[in-house]
Length: 157
Image (cartoon, rainbow, N blue to C red; front, top):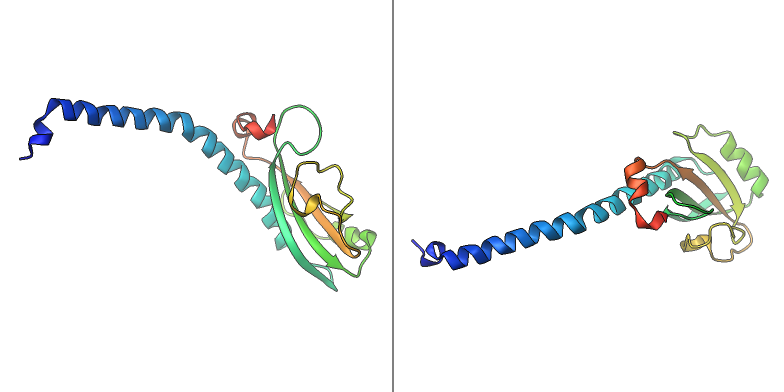
């Protein structure tokens, strides 16, 4: 039998570390969990876009997702998925193609020439960069996991 396990001072020290670990987990755990769940919701929007077929003579260059307060005022989270594509089609033709697709869930897909997305301040990635001719951003807004996750994520304030 170990003398350490019989020592009351050592047991109190060990118990103190356990309590400290529980307190740290209670403080750090929820914000980290909320952030991860919201990021997963945004990636889900991106995945839904990636699952859609591309028009002919079009190639996928990149994709991204963001969970944050991206546009507008006030509080609340927004879930954005976006694809950067290169195409010989015009923005109008691309929009008509995506309008004809059966879009999953409540997504509304829009097409804009790359570099013309000034509304997406702070979205980062290729949404902020000026695009070259023939590149377009296909983007969609999605729904989040629920009010609790949207209210307690600091990125939405």
